[in-house]
Amino acid sequence: MPTNDEPNIAAGGDVASQDNIGSPGGGIAKLREELARRDEIIAQGDQAVKFLNAQMADLKKIVVQRDEGIRFLRMEMSRLSSEPVQQREWWDTQFANSWERNSGPAQTAHFMQRLIANLTTREHDFLSSRPLRILDWGCAMGDGLNELAKAFPLCDLVGMDISGVAIQKARLKYPGLTFVETERGILEDHVDVVVTSNLLEHFDAALEWLERLLVASRWLVIVLVPYREQEPLVEGHRVSLSEDSFPEVFRGFTRLCARPIQVDPSIWGGSQLLVVYGSSPYIKEFVVPA
Image (cartoon, rainbow, N blue to C red; front, side):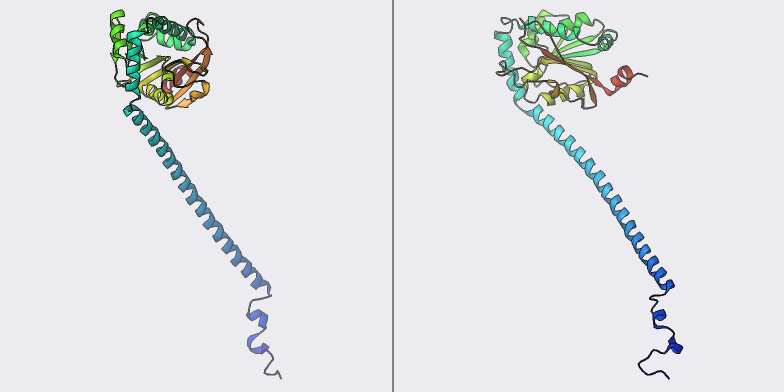
């Protein structure tokens, strides 16, 4: 006869069986429950990772938009700043008083001759075989544009400068060529090719002005600047430029060339840096083999 303190096995069976503890069936059920809970946690973790990845992608888009906004703002600030106006006053004085006396025309012509002579065969053939519209940005008194006209007679050539004095003298000196005065150096229309020689070093925001040239060009932008100019800089020069000053990829253009070239030491006491950028269509059609 069981006492009141003993379990009633006949009525309820084994105590451990009642609680599903210790029996093989109870252990498996517990394991399945734990596995299900683990799978649920893993699924929640996967969802959290997907959410974070989506948030990161959105954040990257925001950063890109921010960077584009900052670049645009800088361009607009540069466009509206007084720097081009100050440059115009300085250049008008130079062209009116000392440019010709200091052999400025000969220097302009020589630099453009060296630029043309050091183009790759691919770029030279491209320019010489098509009726392209070429802009000489910062043409001074037109001596560089005249060299371009002789080298590429099929092309429609335009010289642009912020100095009204230079443009007036250029029109008198080369009546068969087209010259445009621009108060702030702004390029209003697109051209096929932009060429600029020894001008970007005159701007603190040289890269922002380069960006303007890239935006205005369909095919190529060709730049010549003093290479690693040492302090003290020549009067009017604001920055010293090297290969590192020019991004390899910029505003949809790829840098095709950035190399020093030699010039007449009596014209310039150092090397010049020739930089060539090609647009995506140019790269696809003329650089990347089919």
